[in-house]
Length: 553
Image 1 (cartoon, rainbow, N blue to C red):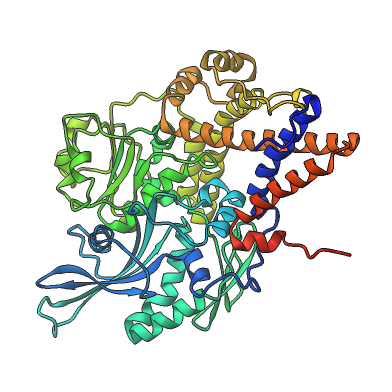
Image 2 (cartoon, rainbow, N blue to C red):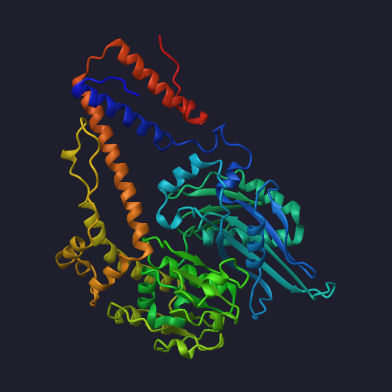
């Protein structure tokens, strides 16, 4: 729509219209919606901000695993999603898992499903650190599995799982929630489940960086990033913990594992139970934080998964994915994978840590093989002996696991930051100078990322400025620039920089309009007003309500 076609001022007005579109697009970010009083939230909206649904999965002698209950009852799951949940909610190994077991899985979301909470959840994603952002294409399943002897049943065992289905990677939080809800459910059945869901539907929507008080079944959970010892309040991490225990069997190879995860290498974790499998995979994924792991990962994977054939075929190279498995069958079907981690029983792990060399893949014939790393990979960086000695000393002195975890998290964080800082510095240089942003022109474009130009910056401004590690940093960067983790990181950084450019351009246009106080004919003003009205009317009703201002006399 042409409003005014008159030289310099016409170009400025065109920019006014274009930035007006951008401005309205961003309104829901400028005017966040209040959680507790907003009349636009419908019943179950707050619940849906945390969970998609809660499932009860039981075992039937004739049907096998089956979803017995889905709550709330209006929640939708495709048949393929139900099948995935059924198989992933039960242990797939010979470990027995008597008693109560908790673990986590991840599966693909059926295509075509959209949330009614787009406005609220988009705002949440914008504010959240990368490790807390919603998973766009997958669901997480948080499982509380109970298996006890019961002679009254034909099978001789009571076997049932309570499963929380969510798009949020709040591993520790949801496991803590299950510890409160699941035992009550197994005792009181569905009325208890309904009460818990009603409590969750009164929670505020997730908000990273704030302490959230979350009442649940007569208890108060306090979600935060710190821990307290208050007797009647559970104050818990919502981040993924990086368990030092997960790396216990591969103690001397943590730096090599960091490289494998950073480069998006195909990696399989063979463990004796779903709990140890999922804990280890999640620990691996989080070891490159604050960089987001952009490839696929399955904390617990079974032979019934729809991607089973794709991942076990020998006709092509394994995809960029981290799998956690427990079934001994995988020791044979995944033997062609380039990197295999064998995890022993963590509960039986001794206090001493013995150094084990990286073993050749041909030595791995069964799941009963000794714990260790089976790979032909040659690390780019020299081994950091200091962190090994520090952690080994902690084991010998029986240092608390929380302290060991803190040491390991800090080490991985500093290593990743040393690696990513040169990339951040180079990408920032691709941003046009602010003096080149003119209200009379369209926003300038970002300069392209040129690999060789970036590599030249490493000589004087590389990771050696912040990391004492020696080795082939250049080779590591070249390999990283070809992997999905770089692609995902750069796409996100480019998107952020484009938004920054648009915001600076909007500011320049507004300042120019304010400075020049352009004289406009009444007809032009009328057309401009009509265009703005059409933009407003194209917005959802809730945003129109935010924008509406009663006319003043």
